[in-house]
Structure formats: C-alpha cells, structure tokens
Image (cartoon, rainbow, N blue to C red; front, side, top):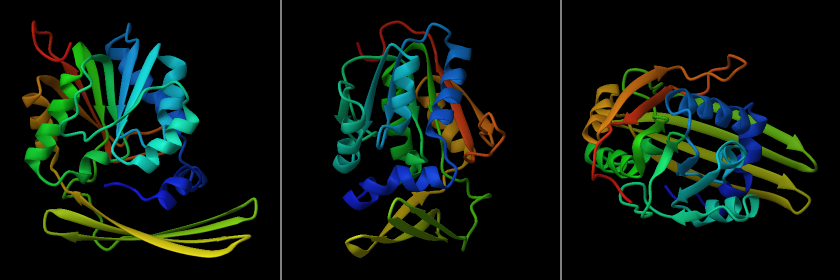
Length: 251
C-alpha cells in the first residue's frame, strides 16, 4: 500500500506517542542479526517507510540502504537520512544489483501482499539480496488463528499545538483482513480529516516458512517479539539464514 502524504507526515509521531520505540526495535533486530552473523556490516531495510529504523541501523552497520514503494514515505526518510541510498521499489521484484549481510522487512509490510505466490516472490527477492550466510528478518501480519475480527482501537496525541485522533476498525474478509484507519487533526489552521483502508493477507505460519525455504533460507518463527523492556511489539518475527551456495544471488 502507498501511504498518502498526510499519513506519512504524522506516522512517526503517532506511533511514538503510542509507545513504539523505533530505536529499541532496531537495536533488538541488530542483536538478532549479529547473533547469527557477527561480522555483518551491511543491511538493507525493505519497506523502510520514513527511515525510523534505518536511522539507528546506520549507527550500528557500516553501510545501510532502504527500499520503499511510497514516494511520500521516501521523502520523509530522505530528509531524515541524507546520504543514505533510498530506492523506489516493490518488494516483489526489486533488484539493486548487490547483496547485503542482512535484510529486514518490518511493520507487517509483507501482509499487504495479495497472495501466497506474491509472498514467495517477495521473500525470494529479499533473499536474493543476501550474501550466503546472510540474515533475513521479516515481521509478519497476524495469522488466521490470532487475528481479532471486529477489533476497535483508538489513540489521541496532543502536543505542541497539535492534536491527532486516530481510530481503527478491523474485520476479516475471507483470507484477508480489512483495517480502516481514520484520522482527525487539529492545529492552528483548523481541522483536517482523512482515512485509509488497508487490506492484508492472513498468511499461515507454515506459508511464511515455506516461502523462506523456497528462497533458500533456513528459518524459524520467534513468537511475541518483545523489546528490552518486555513490551510485546508484534505477532513475532521470522528469522532466516541464507544457505551457503556458489553462484547464486545478485552480485
């Protein structure tokens, strides 16, 4: 999904106000990578959004790059990360012409893929950008058995003359979830409202693991990814290591 300019503008502030720590997540992810590839020096963040994770990755790894489909998100990331290569691209078929020691894909972005075949394509494209022995970390959307049909959420941020109200409603439609997000913003200029609808596929855990295997990665699912303070961050993480093999992948 390509987020609009309004969503891109408020994305970081809203999620930080809800307790999300992009810095803490990035450091935890770096620890996961380094535990499997201690000499990892390069990282690619796919669906990098506003670059909030990349900002911390750049302090840990010698070289980082990002791929992001949304031009509005890339624009925010470019302001945050001058000098960091940020590529437009679709996770299903991008080709940067080089490999990395680690590839990450956070924010449940893979859930936005429309089918299992597209999931296989995306995991394959990410794995193709891994050097042999490289680490691929993917944050999934919910599985069919733990998605909360009819879930309603709400949050209000008030700071520095700005008030943002964010409300969500989720429902299941077949093998997909429909998440509607409505914003109402008040500032010195008055009120503004906008909404977005996000459809995500409810892939099974086995489907994710199969996609990793087809891409030549040994993978495991780590349930209930938590930050250092113990706060649950997402349904979990898939962590794969690319099999050693001659002559494959990008160079």
